[in-house]
Amino acid sequence: MSEMAQTATVDGEIGPGGLTAQESKRAIGILFLIVCVDLIGFGIIIPQLPFLAEKFGASDFNVSVLFAIFSACAMLSGPVLGKLSDKIGRRPVLAFSQIGSAAGFVLLALACGGVFGMGTMGFAMLYVSRIVDGLTAGNASAAFAYVADITTKEKRAGVMGVLGAAFGIGFSVGPALGGLLSSNPDLPWLPAAGAAFMATLAAVLTWSLLKEPKHATGERAKVSVREAVAGRPLVVMLLSIGFITMWALVMHETTFGLFVKEKHTFGLDQQHTGYLFGLAGLTIIVVQGGLIKPITRRFGNWMPAMAGYVLVVSAMVLFTLAGAEASMTLLLAGVMCNATGRSLAGPTTSAILSGAADPRAQGLLFGLSQGSQSFARVIGPLVGGLAFHYHNTGQFMLAAGFMAVCGVWLFWLYGIYGRVMAKPVETAMEPATAEASA
Image 1: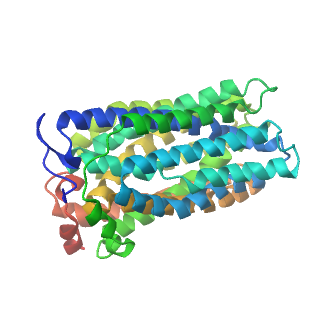
Image 2: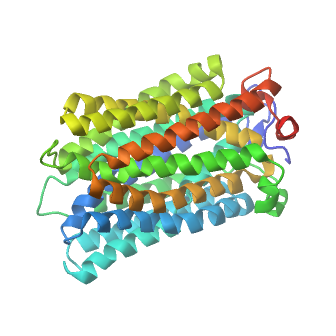
Image 3: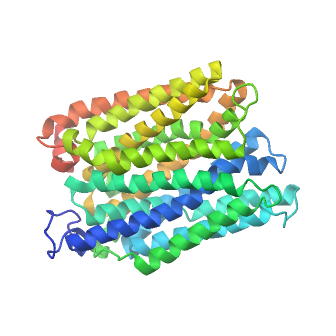
């Protein structure tokens, strides 16, 4: 099957990816479960990393580097694993990535448990654990490429929203579970061990339950990076917007724990910081799991995407004001506003990007997207950490500026490409039509 997106089918007829409508629904449900489990493990660790690193005497800058080194490795592995998923299939790459995460979390648990000592060697193993996880970080690109394989363009944003809800559950349950697992100071390795268990379970579920969609692997394997982006200005610009967006967002993510634990502002501990991340995850579940489908059905993809950027800019302003006023109300409003904005913008921009790309290069496309955003995750923690060092809300002010630029850029693209459609953008626009209008 050379075409990756075909007309929707009724039950029993073969649709995208060589699956019937019933098989596609089952595959989406299984993928949802797998991503939930996978992201719960990831969510357990991310809010805990600053606190775990501090046990080794790490500075705020060391914490930023700890986040950045994972992203540097993911930047290198993302396009490679995305291309590999085009060649050998989504399922093996997804399982490999999850096994790599489990191995990294096991190393982290051993380091936190004092196996390597609490000095230089123990701290070095924290870095090694993040390197292992980063070099195998292909789960996101494989999962989104899988969705592109088995959905039509009309339904892609809604299904990606469902997948985004799975991310939300992971980031809701994970941090809350991480907060509980970290409550016993005599077992500092427990959060990492819990994350390792969840990653291993995700790998088992992937291999035993997920059905590989049928695809023309020969055709997909032949598409090069240059062919995937050449003559597709919308693809290039959306990848650029994704890079800048992630740069802005990661400045917030990696310094948020440091920001809320400051005694002169909020003075939150490990457990309550995890609960804040849990609130964000719960908001993502509500928006992406229940609201994104009717919203995109009514407004298409571009309008919710642009609204998402407006909301995230507003959230960064709220965080800045919360820091100045030490206001918990503004902090909570910022958390929910940020999560809502990201939930609107994430699946819609991914669907637009997928629809504008070569259908034979979905894995490569999302691998490039993951790689470029991982590069942003290298820069973001360093810039965000430096901004936080000079002012405790400096990173939020920078992020607001970056997101505003991206929102205006997206609005400009809508003005160019929106004129060629009679339907929502990613359902009506073929790449060649969009290129002609540009």
